[in-house]
Structures are given as C-alpha cells and as structure tokens.
Length: 198
Image (cartoon, rainbow, N blue to C red; front, side, top):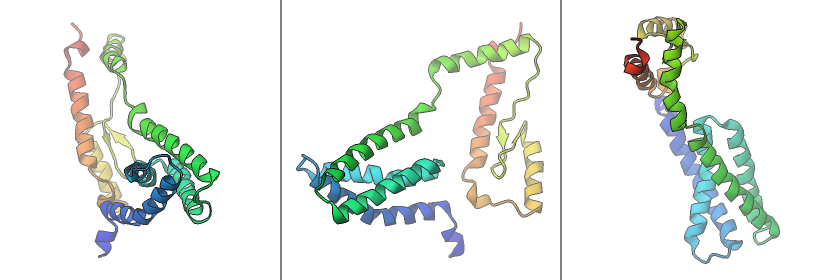
C-alpha cells in the first residue's frame, strides 16, 4: 500500500477527488452571480479554476498554486456567507481572468518562436567558424539536475547517488525518455549540413 501511496499518479487522483466538493461550491457561486441560466457555464468555470491548483502544482508553479488556494478559500467563504453579493461577482471576474492569463502563460509563453529556432543553427556555425569549443550536455540527472555530455558520464554519476541512498526512481517520471530526446536533438543539430564547415 505504501508503494501505491507514494506514486505521483496516486497523488493526482487523490487531489482530483478532493476537488469535487470544491467544484460544487464554485459552481454554486458562479450560478448565483451570473446572467447565464445554463449551468454548464458554471461547470466549465468551476472545473477550470479549481483544477488550477493541481495543474500549477504538478508543473512546479507553487506560488501560483498558492494564489489559487487563496482563491478557492474565497469561493468557500462566499459560498457560506455572501452567495449573492457584490463580493461574489468581483471574485468571479478576478478568478476567471486570472485563470485564462495563467493557463495561457503556462502553456504558451515559454514556447520558442519560429524565428529563434531558425537562428540556432547559424549561431552554432558561427561558434565553429571562430574555433570556439562548446561542450553541450544534454543528459540530465533527475535527482540533482546536473548535466553531462554523454550517458556514460551520467550513469557513473547516478551510481554515486545509488551508493549514498539518494536515488528515488519512482519520483523522476520519464527522465530517460527526456534525456534521449535531448540527445537526439543534439545529434541532429551536429549532423545538420548548416553546421559543418566547407
């Protein structure tokens, strides 16, 4: 049982279950303070806002998740004491706009645009032309986040973690797949015709 409880998926399932009553509170607050008669608007609002804590926590945005914690507490207080007040309407307006902005920033703000992607091979070529040696390290240790140039170095480093009892395989997710993707990307970059001198 202990092995199941420590799994990441178990925590996500447990958090999702405990969010269900919170969603009900949020649906009620939205329904009482909205011009929409159809309840499905309220359900979309509630699920989006209340799942924000889970999403931002999983993504590592703990400060943002804490702000949403305050928001859900506000929904609970409004639900109990001020269900049809101005406070409810203001809360809905802030939370709806904040959630749209936060999700947009989380999923799209950090994606590289096409222009920056096109410039990368040119920069690599310029480094080679000026005889600047650059050791790229695509293989990252999931425990301490140190990077290495190849899997041999990484495996030697990981064996040190294992010997000192600092290796928790279940906590790292698909780290090997992520390392493989970075390694493949580096290999394609180095093999690209634009990156070889004539």
